[in-house]
Picture (tube, rainbow, N blue to C red):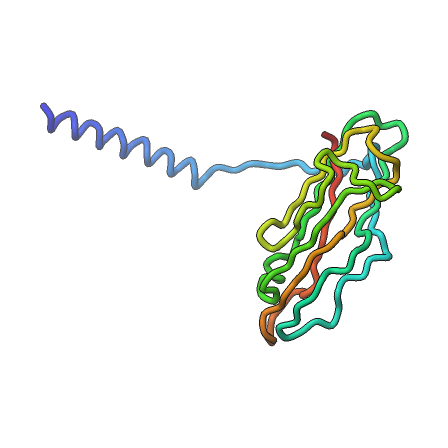
Length: 176
């Protein structure tokens, strides 16, 4: 009797496992993508920021402070916003940097922290995303994503590496 039950269980597992594997290897899906113009905020790169340049060897330094992005909510938008900042080329950077830390803040036009946490967040090679929650009515527009500090250290000089040694930073503003 025990043999019969064991054989039945193995047979059921083999049949259902085969069906699962067949479905997994043959499943398809279609994703529709539509670009929509934002009607709740405008984000632009602030051209005044200058990251460190001409670094090589085991160079160690600090990030210069300054404005990365300008965020201007639409004047009649009544909701809250989430501002996400990403370090998008960590794969290239990790080959060159021993560590890379950037302290970021979301500030209003008076230089006051204007997100819910009201403190700096660290963007680095291990944590390549920071999020600022903005409650409508907080601070004085326009708003800025500011670099308020940080540091870096490069590995020794390496040749033949592809990609960019400069951090590529992306800013996304979504409704909360």
